[in-house]
Image 1: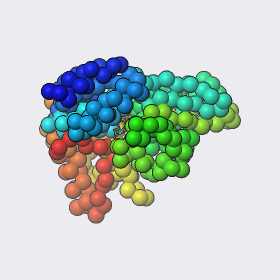
Image 2: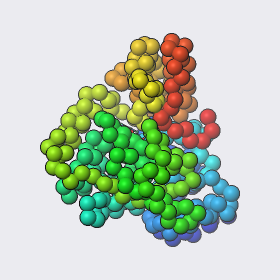
Image 3: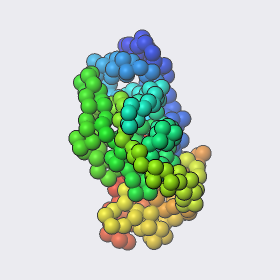
Length: 297
Ligand SMILES: Cc1cc2nc3c(=O)[nH]c(=O)nc-3n(C[C@H](O)[C@H](O)[C@H](O)COP(=O)(O)OP(=O)(O)OC[C@H]3O[C@@H](n4cnc5c(N)ncnc54)[C@H](O)[C@@H]3O)c2cc1C
């Protein structure tokens, strides 16, 4: 197949054909990607995208895979991971991280450099790119509070967005459209030591342990509807513990679906739909997914 041959000839990449995506996603389910490429340089990323474009193949950037449910039928295109692009550096009072860096490491690095405030986000198991796309948030703060600018690849060249032009909203940004790979993010944290004294890191981790289940998940499945909590609606509807195949609603947190070893992506997908229709029938509220479906369902 010419497409695969072209991919395999790109420097600074590792290519796997028919890669099971269960290995790379939070739920640990899902079929194979036609091609899976680890791109270690920006040039390699550009080349992979260009080959996909020329051959009319779809592509998708994957971060840590903690917000994506891949179909059991897999993904008929190329999944690109840039986790190798993970440098983090300080410049004056800001921190810049490449998109493949772990968000948690960025926040630790910032604190070590006396730049504070991001600690509540440190428990999110995200890459910097994935967290920026979703405008991930926790404990009252979100990425938008700390992102100064985002650099993407736009039509093959670097393009920088300031905070306002990122169009951040509740678990969304302009980057959700998926057309521009994020290459790096420049963060502005606080220099005021009062943000250190909050000792937020420890308290937020304790809250997570108390309220969130362990196991294979993508965190919260649904966005909170205005003025309410999806978890509260699911709980009040009596849906904790509801299961489809190997997927079940967590007893600890109604907005988490846990996938056991025998679960399939269809189990998770069908459970999501059952929750939506039962919550709608009880409360007239149509929940919207925070997680993203990839491939055909
Ligand atoms: C235990 C657990 C707890 C969680 N807690 C929270 C929480 O408190 N708050 C919260 O908001 N979320 C939470 N999540 C959900 C998830 O971690 C976040 O949505 C996170 O931002 C996803 O990051 P990721 O790197 O895994 O992205 P992925 O799931 O890999 O990708 C998400 C989207 O971003 C795109 N993307 C990724 N990288 C790039 C890039 N470089 N360029 C362009 N597009 C890119 C992907 O194509 C996809 O569309 C939790 C998940 C788990 C499993």
